Length: 277
Image (cartoon, rainbow, N blue to C red; front, top):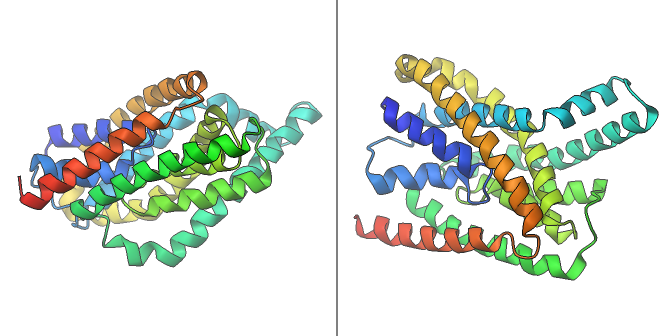
């Protein structure tokens, strides 16, 4: 992987991790479509993607720095009583949303790992992601409650998030659909999805970074990987800022354009890959 490909991956990761279109699906499909000649099943490919996830998580942390700072202050018991209680309530919601991801990850990671580097399968799951997003919009109209997320909501959202173990299913999109299913509006569903995404991304990084350190073929690219991670962080910050405004302003149909994109891109990619173009 040369510098140009690494930076293109960074831009792709920084945008598609937050947009509900699946970063992993794009990371698998796009290089195959463009014939980059990268071995996506190599021992070093997934750890390199994790480096980009670290950059993405840094961008998320920067955007929501105020909320994470308030959470830390509340956990430590610093501030007014109402602030402390609110922060600790958010902590329990984040934990509730993360538990399903940990449990399901332990159970199914190995069975689905072989799918992660398969472009044809990833393109089909991008089409499935379109159906998921459209289904979320239909479910939303039946149970609209507002913006307050409960522990039960967090558990359901975290369970939906587990669909992202399939390459082509968006983590942020699946989490948002879980929020819509529970009657939460787009803006708050997106905010909570981005918040729970940070520990999920960092947990994946902690698990995979040792592999990066021992991937001898990547030692020469470690500096490039760091630059790519920084680029992914900048793009993810900008993507989050855009999406938070977008979801606030288009609450009645916000996921539909992303569903249309995934359906067209996934189906088109499948055909092109199948015929070998």
